Image 1 (tube, rainbow, N blue to C red):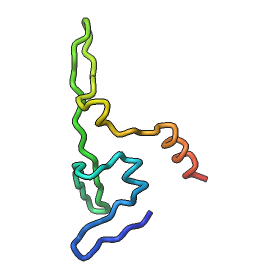
Image 2: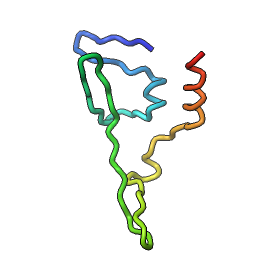
Image 3: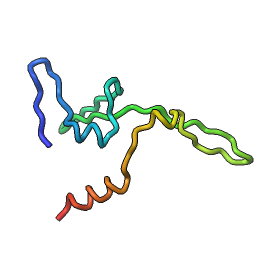
Length: 84
């Protein structure tokens, strides 16, 4: 997908990409740049370690209702179809 930068320096992320990445208004993004590219990385709170019995288990720190719905099989199929 292609997009452009407007006069104010803003970039519009296409709706399909926002939906796939679970980006909503107010989402925090980290901007990373190197010699060849600029990358937007969604910032999400990391998991919390909880001791269950004798083991430590990583549990999400975000409530279930606030997590983006991600269609893993759909993403895998989309990636498969991307290559000839």
